[in-house]
Structure formats: structure tokens, C-alpha cells
Image 1 (cartoon, rainbow, N blue to C red):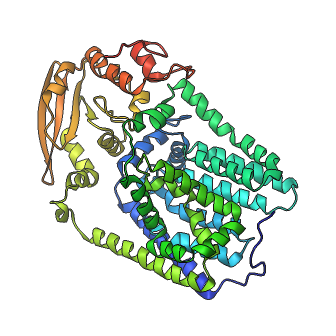
Image 2: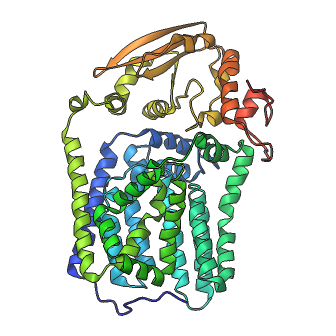
Image 3: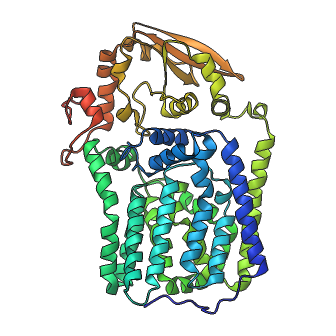
Length: 519
């Protein structure tokens, strides 16, 4: 059965709705443009920036799409922070347009309200950070929009087949953005199994057209030590266990994302929401299945706010189709007030100075972000190789210097792109400075790898920071003391996974799999 519009003769958009759409779209865009040009680069953004500098078929943590996107932006718009962030700045407009295109055949007015609700969400006023979620959201929403239009076709004509195929292609691109696209694939499976078994052939075409994405990712993982699998399924999940606060945090996060006003109205109008879900079944599946998936996941893990963003617009769409007409304006006004509070906070932060934050726990990190060049001017020296003790400072320093800064030491399970890019034998015999913030570094951690070491003391805007200067780097000692530890900790690759390559392993032992005994 096709999903039918409750109001096929939908009236023209009201002047109120048109004015609010224009205002929300334009004002939020202006704020995002300003933030993108003035807010310093974050650690995750700087990490992904280097993916764009070194385009590849994949990266240690995730599939490659955001790296490809940044590479494209750098090649066309230049190597600036605002340019790198432009895709995420424009993303809410693109997603709003896709939602309107997908839902307008059902009800043009309700579709417009869905876009307005989405644009009024505070996240769409403030988010200017380019991450793996940026392409994931675009490709996921495009896939759903195409499927919604395909499902409106009464006959399986050429247009219908084409829409199903394009939906699958977009799903494959979403997979090349982030593994959470698997949840969207699961959603499609549930929808076709429960409601549309007569169109299994269309679902099969969708899946077939999505397969190139997973095929590219599998080929990359086979030739790179299954780094995505080791990170996402093994290394990052060690020690996770059930705790009652995790599902409660998930619930609180959802209330914040949809805004308290919208959450309250959804609860008050839950009967209407259920009726809309029964009528708009695909839309309901795209909302309910991911929510249930992440609810189960929250029993063990803290669900990140960004994990649900690729399904985020459709929650507002379902709400717009459910609320009584006299509650739509109420919801929009409440959401606007909530967004305005966030804008006021941003204005207050912008009016403050660095001195206002001197007593804040984050002050050292703030100085590192806003005074990066001044810090580096103190610590760099001719003939000295610069490194850092963790990936966040390393990539921020590298972004400022426009050359890659490695992490010295084992690091942790996050952001191990060094394992792919850095050959530490290059530094044999060289003088290295490892930048530290926080507690003064212990020389004993560095003495085994240099002929001599010393701690250099620096200060930036009242924040002390340090550099361990090591002379005559001993690669053999570092290989035995650090690189073998990294292998044991992060490259315990299951024997049943077939491998054609592993750059880290091949540099370490000359083989795809190293035979290093456990300690």
C-alpha cells in the first residue's frame, strides 16, 4: 500500500511560514559562516584535514569520504579554515532542500514545517565542524529522500527503478563516510520485510547498487591490517560495560537534540504521533529503527550526540506530520526561543576575552587553539624535528605549520593515522622536540630513545608548556620499546581475517603479520 497524503489539496504556504523559513535559513547561515571563519580549528577537524592532504581509499579510523571532501575543497577553494568548513556550513540548507523534495508530494505545507523545525534546531545554528558525520548526513538523507520518492511511484516503471538504484548508490556513499550507515541499511531491511515484501526486487536492486561502497572498504581493510575493524569493533570497545547512567544520558541527549519544546509536544501528542507513524510508514521506520538500535547500544556504551545525526531531520519531519495544525506554530516559536538562547550564549562567549578564562580548567587548551602560532614560534628551531605527545596537539600544530607533526610514543586507540603515514626510521640520528602541555614530562620516558634528553620550559599567556628535546634519536630502541608495544596493543588482528597488506606491520617486521610474542 502506498503512503497517501492526508491533505492532497494542500494550500499555499502561509506568509508566516514563508517568512520564518527565509529568516531561519538566512540567519542561521550567516551565523555559521561567521563561526566557521572565527572559531579555531579543533583537534578532530585538524585530524581529518590531513586525510584531505593525503587522499586514500581509507584511513585508520573510518572510511574515506570526509578526506575526499576536504581534498576537493582544498583543490577548488583553497587551504583555509573557512573553506574546509564550507560543506558543513551549507549542509543544513542542502538537507532541508532534500527533506522538502522528498515530502512535498505527501503534503507541501507539512513538508515546509518539517524543514523549519529542522532549521530551528540549535545544532543547525552552531555546528561548523567538518567531521566524518558531514558526508554521512548528506548521503544518508539523500538516500532516504530518493527512497521516499521511489515509494510514491504506483508502478515499477523506469523512473521507479532509477530512484531505487540511486538510493542504493547514495547508501553506498554513506557507507564510505561512516559505519553508522549500516543502521540505515538495517532500517531499509525492516521496512521492506514488514511493509513492502511485494517490492523485494526493488530492495535487491538498492542493495546491489550500494555494494561498491562496502567492496572498496573491504579491499582497503584487507590491505591495511583491517584498521577500521580493529578500531571500531575491538580497540575502542575494550572495558565497556552496562551502567544505568548511559541510557539516561541517551534519553537526555535526544531531548536536547529535538529541543525540550518539541519533545514535550511529541509526548503530549503521542497519539497523533503514532497515527502519523502508521500512515507514513517509511518515515516512521527511518526514525524508530535507529532510535531503538541506539537505545540498545546505550545499555553498554555512551551514545555520542553525533551518532544519530544522519536520522535527525526525519524526526522533525514525523513531528511536523503529526502535530495538529494549531500546534505547529507553537512548536516553531518554542524551538526559536531555545535556539535564541544558544545564540545569546555564543554572543556572550564572543564578547569575552582570553583573560576571562584564566581560571577555567580548559584555559590551557583554549590557549593552544587561539595562540598556536605563538607557541610554535617559541618551540621550533632549525634542524629540529617537532612532535607531540598526543594526537590532538600533534594535528593542531601540524595544521598551523602546514606540515605533518607525528605523535611520539604509543598514544591510544584513537586517531592512529601515524601508523599509516609515519616511518620513524626517517628520524634516526636527528634531534627531536616533543611538545607537552599539562604536567612536566618525565625524562625517564624518553631517555631510552636518545643519547641525551632535556626539558625545555616555555610560557604562553600564563600557561606553562614544555618540550622534551632528545638528541640523536635511536630508531632501533624506539622500534623495540614503542612500536612493538603498539603492535601488541592495537594490531592483535584475528587470524581468520584475510590480509593482503599492513603498512605498520610491514615497516615493523617486513611481513603482513608480525610474529612478536606477547609480554
